[in-house]
Length: 328
Image: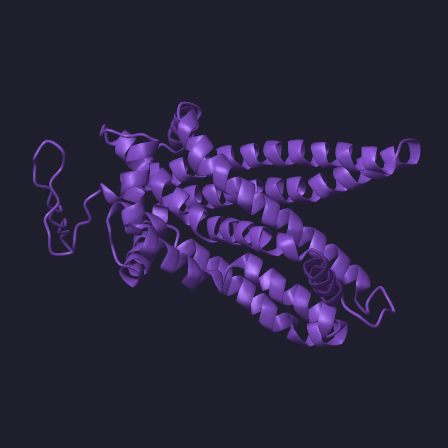
């Protein structure tokens, strides 16, 4: 396997699939990035108002809940349209990223195999594998690294540093298990989407594929590093967006009217959101392409059992040479 060539081909293919970037990268990234920014802001103020840094009697969650309840009580006419909007956005956030991933993998694989491809064809076949892929994502999300971080932040914020230190070995074990499962289930998505395999069978086949192709460990490690760099970039962007907006709004508020600072801050926040969503979308499609090309190449190789006789490319049977006998 030519690792560098796969990376180069994947990047070239990504640059030539603008529709995939917009529909299956940029659009779902808007929802995931927005939720990520909201979660980072929530965690910041939740830690700030917790007993670790404050003597307040109420939590940030309670304050947010009371604010929402007061807003609903004083703006009853807006409750239904805002509720419907929130429901639609929540549905897109929950379902569309998985559908976009399935559609992107279908489109990339079909184009790689010289079949008719594109965003429409990818979406048509992506819908067929959406439900099992969504089921798998729900199943594996419990062991995801990000979920463990959420659990750790909840413990240290609500139960205290002492309890967190007691549970730290458990969290370390969970992190190790999460990394191992992430590695073993690397190809599960592709077995589900490309080969139409059931969830548990896809997990089994993925673990088998990873273990039997141990010579590709370096390539898998390289891809994991690539994914790690992508996550770091995403975290930096997620952290920078609210920081820059708050900083710009605070500065403008000192030299201009408050309403002007809010408008400028909102425009800056929207621009940064669109920019970060596009960058994340490009990286997502590039990642899907690299993994799809790798999956197609590895699974195209025929595995021989110990009983089969090896035949080379020109059809010659290879048998081991008889041992040399030495006169003693």
